[in-house]
Image (cartoon, rainbow, N blue to C red; front, top):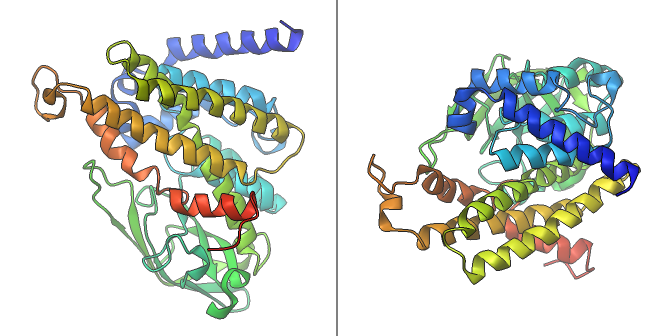
Length: 372
């Protein structure tokens, strides 16, 4: 073992021990279903220990460490079955996008507050008539000189009911311009004219929301990147979202390890092989990020394989269990973890781009196939 490998292994042990000693009982029992305030306090504690924003620049509140340590932290939290920065999309999506595209003032204003969970963020991308076709959005940001006036509707906005800010993709050009007429805006969710309507999900929870914008005033200083270049910012944002969703591969690995003791079968074994290969691919991406590489279509590969894998695992687990696993009552055999996991996993192949869209993207961008 090289010196670098030895140091990283010591770091892994340190992270594992910290988790063991510091997870609050409510977090241990309820996981990401714990109350939002409990999760926010837990995120802040993770940050203060140096395990959140591990590779983010120090000048904006991060810890400036090796990106490989980022994957070690995520692995250990996943292995322990403990939530890691699960309130809002600040850490997973918005923070990396602002670091990549934001102004110096925006980085100083928002990044550390994202890490400490002082601010909760949602994302305003999809619309009722523009889900997979993101370039077809109609939410309009009308230029009024020193500010924009925003009108429109967004849907599937995770955590919008809790959020302080929305990372909003809006149309500043004409619809005929498609992706060339879009601009990314930071919108204060306390602004007059915003209405949030939660959407009841199959799990019984309501993390998703519809958000209505009625003559909402947004200062020009809240433009991320340049006016008219929102598509570029959105694509970098989606790549980080997909990479983050792809980290469920660690949760899949833990789930397989738990299940394979009781219900070993070929499908679980084959999925386990997929996850082993995906982890190697993920680590290779992080090595490239360490050298300044900006995540591209690789994120789509990670997200596509991991999201479909976790669905297969839960379906396999439930189909190979006693029927009591599905009876939602306090009876012997009921497994709320499997039932909730099965239901929640249905959304994973939609969030961050459907599996169908990702296959098209990889076919066109990576393989050079003609557009469908």
